Image 1 (cartoon, rainbow, N blue to C red):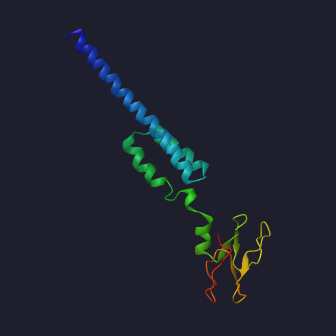
Image 2 (cartoon, rainbow, N blue to C red):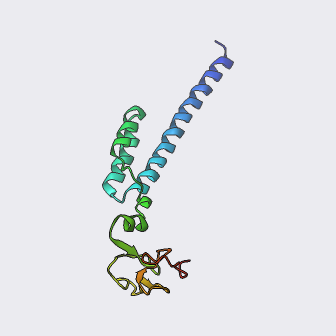
Image 3 (cartoon, rainbow, N blue to C red):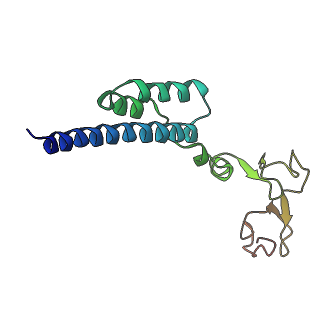
Length: 140
């Protein structure tokens, strides 16, 4: 083999190794960002990063998909929690309150409004009065 062929093979080998190192670093950064967006558990975050750093991709990809939480932290939004529970959200501060509360437990703002037609009190976020159907003109 002449020198040009050896130089070509050596550069090809270097490029392949550099590509694998780059992909490994990118995957470590991706897992670190993904797991921190999914959970606040420091143990789970550290174990996921260690898992991806020290194991081969054939092992760590399935293991990471098994141990990672299914939902992201931002999926647990207060309005979703309020919809499935017997609660309402304060329009002033965003705190979740029980539906039977008249004022927010955090800021003290009134949680209900009175219907202009039938004088029934209902939560601020309702578009219409549940008794008579009158529109909520205070809803933005």
